Length: 330
Image (tube, rainbow, N blue to C red; front, side):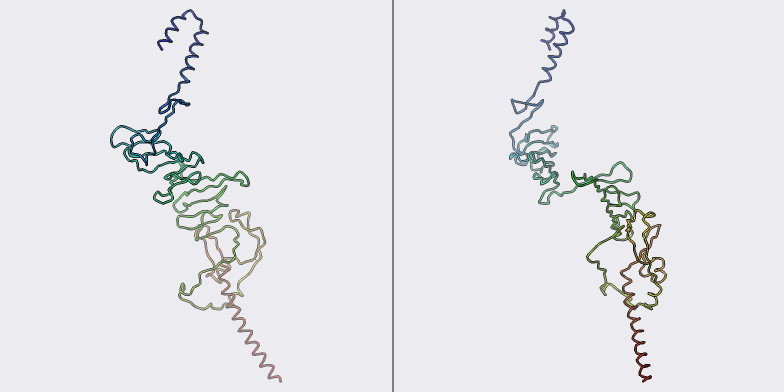
């Protein structure tokens, strides 16, 4: 600065243009200044190098490339540096004298992977170590939006995908709080309520699994072991009940219930309200304000079996009576 003042004093008669040039040259000189710690050839504004080993392998008080902390025997420090084998970089907070602390955050300088609690990340982000001594647990706090919990966004692939997918927690009340996996709408996703009920295309399942849409499976089995049952009794008047049932053809009301994902195909079946008057055992009512009804069609099989058996007895009786009549005529 003293030298700069001398130059300015010696050039009091210079024009403003020359003074501006000198100031600009001086500023460029200052801006190009570089500082090196542990190196005589810095290439950045501040370069810090060290030859110490990583904190877990040394008892030196100057581990790593950069160490930030306060004075005192019982303080914490922040270390940043490169491992002795140059396979990973670390960033960790630890007790000042505790050099055996595992790295909080590790970076693979070659593959670009990041590890939390591990120095050998196997993917873009690895949490916890392979031995299980550091759990791979992640906590996602809720957003400021009143009803939204933590959320993970899975961006669509470069080719093929048309929308992003989300995994989050959502709920306006305790009764409908749910874990969601969906893209543009819950109608094309899956939800799990806090009571364990699962909905596919349904955001408010009232049973263990509720699906809005068709299901294709090789087989579906229902629990039927005798040890599960009590008060076992035969079906009374099975044939009479079957004769009262009314099978119908129908189209699903897709316009009034778009969220139900009804099929566009022509269908056959029963009307649940009609079946309930004859066979209430096979009708199920949803536990919500709408109280929509469903028919357990698989349970109707038992009724049909008993009805056929009863009908066969009648047929056998008629055959026997006809045989007697023929003998009398002879």
